[in-house]
Image (cartoon, helix red, strand yellow):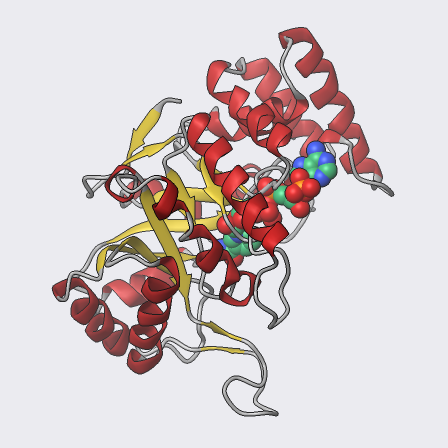
Length: 325
Ligand SMILES: NC(=O)c1ccc[n+]([C@@H]2O[C@H](COP(=O)([O-])OP(=O)(O)OC[C@H]3O[C@@H](n4cnc5c(N)ncnc54)[C@H](OP(=O)(O)O)[C@@H]3O)[C@@H](O)[C@H]2O)c1
């Protein structure tokens, strides 16, 4: 698998990353089952065999179980830690945490960020994270507090680099006003059926745009400021490859185009869905989350192909539900 250098870091990441959101088996408070533990190991091994060296976590995934089951890999592969890039996220709190009746909320307070990283390192059984992202923008964010937390975590060697997820350009600017640490990543939802990030530039000057322009040039901002973009849900949860029931018309039409191009290129449908993201010059890194071993392999075939401009636009038109204006 080809590598990409994450700008302003020494990190060389595989073009495709693996997202560990579901490897803990379920989102209950029960510990991971033996079956989930075994399945997680197979998923990690398959990803490594495909050349993936980048693993994305969050403290909340399967309520901490995703990180816990991931840590089993150290026993099998003791030298692995230095060879892979581990990213995790914090800032989302479930309802009833820590007191019954508390609402679901975001928390970018100094104490919560530092405490969350302690929990993450403990569950992952590692001394450091390569990357820590703030999971979703907290309207009550105090950038000075975030700066203090990042400084503490960096100086103690617990986190090497920092980033954000689901943040707009303006929200990043606000944080940057206080931060000494650069923000090197923004992880955003992006796939063939969720393509506002690029479509908003295409429809910005139209009278009746397909949907409201709402990202305010976030993709362009990230490119301008050397912030690597990662795509979450890059497989569109299977909808762009037509494998889920009750598809809406836009999804099923997109899946038809994906299928035709996949046949022409003699690759999987998943490869086409991922290759569409990789073809964009922003060097967006798809973070795939399928737990199906064959689908992991199928998605990684994207590394072997490059879509033409015409194929890319045909898929874009299908995904947006209309040809470009
Ligand atoms: N920053 C954020 O806010 C945020 C939010 C969500 C996710 N993420 C990250 O992004 C990663 C990927 O997200 P994701 O899991 O939503 O994305 P995804 O890779 O687009 O979709 C994976 C899900 O779709 C199903 N799926 C995929 N292809 C399929 C197909 N051809 N047929 C049937 N089902 C298919 C998978 O089921 P199987 O497992 O059965 O294949 C799995 O449930 C996560 O693991 C996480 O690391 C980040």
